Amino acid sequence: MLAITDTGLIFTKDPFDRERYEDLRSLFSEMLNQVSDLNAEEVAEVLKPTSAYVTPLMDVRAWIVEDEKVCLVRGKGEDSWALPGGFGEVGYSPTENILKEIEEETGFTAKTERLLAVFDTNRFQLQSKQYAKFVFECQLFDGQFQENQEIADLQFFAIDQLTTLSEKRITKEQMEILWQVYQGQREQYID
Image (tube, rainbow, N blue to C red; front, side):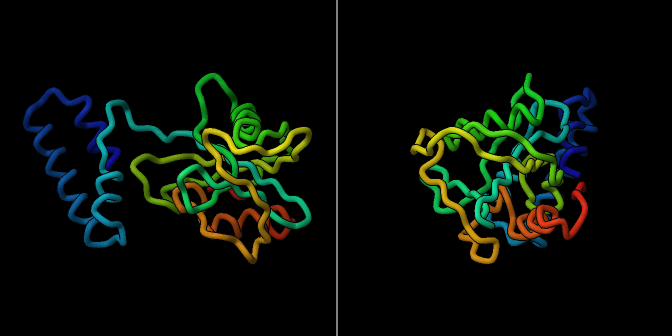
């Protein structure tokens, strides 16, 4: 509903249609407040207007396992952890994006082994924008982690002993799905 109203508000020339789209947006806000566990700040983030045709964005994440433990990074000023990765940048393929993100965030060069999953964030984490989250199994090579402008820490965690996750970036349910795909207990996951 939000994508329809935002797109309508961008392209409509009719003042009556504009009013209808604004009414729909207001109704969506009321509905979201009633049925979600989001606080006022989170609702405002979800309802942040856009200035372009609404399409999903790309997020890339690295699934790196060593000694049966998964690599997670903690951003500067954050208490929660996520798989290394970030927004896909224009001009790079998903694979090129994840290799770039790994090097920037971890200090290591890496190679991709396979695509484990493509998650639709609307199914897992309600956000202001919809993302297609590509998660690649990757292997680290040369390098050494050093705190950098984005990342304060890097650690490996057993899947049954995960720390607090950054739910905007990765959920516990997604981590469990990824572990099952990695272990060969289920097929590649694509929403």
